[in-house]
Structures are given as C-alpha cells and as structure tokens.
Figure 1 (cartoon, rainbow, N blue to C red):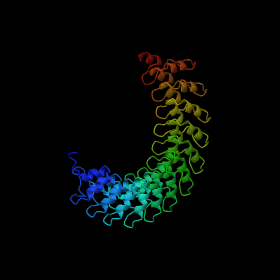
Figure 2: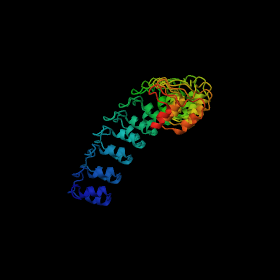
Figure 3: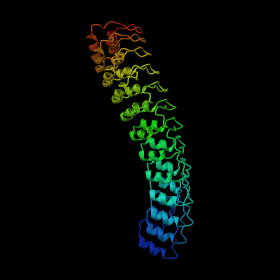
Figure 4: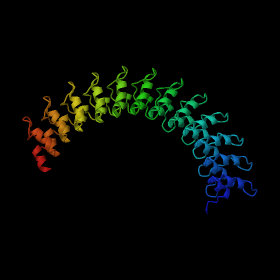
Length: 435
C-alpha cells in the first residue's frame, strides 16, 4: 500500500509469513531494521506486536537490529509491548539481550514493563521481571503516580498483588495521588476480599486509615458499597473503629449502609455494641433512619425501628422533618405503615420550617394511600393548618387539584371546608374553582 513506507520484510513479518522472512534475511541488501514512514515500526516491532516469537528470535539473533526502538505513537519499547500483552517467551528473549533496559518506562505515561504487566494481570511476566535485580518493583508512573502494586490492586489481580507484597521493597501504604486513598481503600471499595486479606496480613498496613479527600475509612467504603464479606473481615479487627464518621459528611459506616439499602451490612453493624444506631451526620443532620426512609429502603427501616434506642421522631436539622414526614410527602406508603406501628411515633407532628403535618404533605402531593392511613388514626387532626401559610390539608388538596384526597377529607365531619388560609384569605373552594 502506498504511503506506509513498509518494506517487503515488514509486510512479511506483519502477516506472519515466516518462510518469506527467512528468505529475505538471507539477503545482504535487505535492511532488517528499517521502519515504515507512517508509524515507524520495524520488522521486529511487528513481530513483537503480533506475538510471533519465532520471527522475534530470528531478528534478535542479528547484530544489526535495535531491540530498544521506541514506537513513535506511544513511546513504548518492544519490551513494554511484550510485557503489556503478556508475551512471556518474547519478554524472556528481550531480557536475554544485555542492551535491553528492563525498567525503561514509556514516554507517554511513565509506566515501566513491570507496571504494565501488573496492571494487566500477567503474573508470569511479573515473575520474570521481579527476578531481575535491575528492576524497581515500587516505581510509580509519572502520569498517575501509581506503582505496580497500585495497578494490581485496582484491577483485582490478586496473584500479582501476592508476589509484590512478598517483597520487602514494596510500599503497601502508598497513597494514590488523585484521591488520597491507600491500596486497602481501593480494595475495600471494590469488594476484593482476597486482596483485603493479603493487605491486612501486613503489620504496616493501617486498617482504619481514611482517604484524604472525604475522610472515609475502608470500613466506610465497603459498607457504603455493600461488600459484606469485606465488612466482616474488617470488623474482626480490634484496631478498627466501626462507628467512625467521615470528615466531609460526618456519616458513619451505618449511615452509608442505611442510605444505600445494604441490609446485610446494617444487620452486622447493629449487632455491635460500639455502633451508635441513631447518629446524625454533620452535613444535613440526617440519621440512618431518615436516610433509609428517604431512599425507600423498607428492610433497613424495619431493622432500625426494632431498636429502642432509635428515635423515630428525630428531626433533620436542615429541614426539620421526621422520617414519617419524608415518607408521607413522597408517598412511600409501606414505610408510613412501618413507622406508624411504632407507639412513640407522633403521626401529627409538623416540620419546624412550615409547620406542615404528615397529612398536609401527603394531601399536597396527592398521596391518597398515605392520606387514607393517616385519616384512620384517631390521633391525627384532619383540619390542622400549617404555621407558615395557615393552610389545611383540604386547602392543599384543593389548591393542587387532588380530587381523591379532597373527597376523603370532606367525608370527615370534623373538616371545615370553608377554612381560609392566613396568607391569601382564601377558602379551599376558591382555589379549586380557580384551578
């Protein structure tokens, strides 16, 4: 093809025509190391890229072939290519050459052959490279700052992690630059149980070290993501605080698990005596119960309400709403039912900002099933006006055109259909007629 500038030898190598390669190499007037004009790849480059060990061997036996040529578009040596793609035989052949640097990084990311092999889980290539005394097993790349161990942990390559941790010259506590997380944090966040166990076997690994960005511990991340096996492993450690809140949101592992609906994790944490089941975070002032309620995690809500030391009437600091108010407003009828089964839940308590009761919030949003449940209670005032606008549940239903809710309220003998609000001095009928 025109424009590629490739020699017959390059074409033969690329297409793996081994006999043609042999014939051409017997010629004295054939340059065995001539690169193409487009990509600059030599015959040896093509052979390495295609994993053709037989041709690689033929070319490396020549004294006029450069084994350290950089591929122009990525700045990688041939050893890097072979290590990245796990070509063990070719890696060995290249390392047999004294003029091949086993630790030379690429020019794009600054990753060494060991780094690429660890990243892609090529354990045999990693083993070959670690046998070399002139390979730095803990060298970070220049782009991400990640070491071979970092890449292996991130990609879940447990066999490679094991080999690297057996070394005395590899740091298991390295922080990843862009997020300030330890390798243990990476492993716990993604639920890599085997790697978590290996890291925790090291005495120099702190099982409770938080990241620098959010202040979340390994337990916090694993609880948040529902990795029950990892949570169990970490909770077996005596040097882990199971109730430690992060520094950004002030949320404990239980809060994260409750918010995400991780029932198994919530159960494990609630079995601990040193875990507070009702802590309010410092970000929004929400408890595990309020977060579970807001995200419709009924299983978690049930577990929390089984505890006598969980306050079901706890107000969220930023909006002054109870879990029942959240559930009623959003029509979460199952959660409303669960909450109303608690004798200490006040079904008529308004929020501190508007003074609107659960019935008012449900009526405003047309949540008929919730309205029905609340009206069946003897301790709910169906005519209670909020403190902000002086608007009753019927007023809100009429204002927003929720005829089903309005009908239920008007069937009550204790609802005043003519009660006007204090803000506009309009009765419910006036709003219904307008809209």
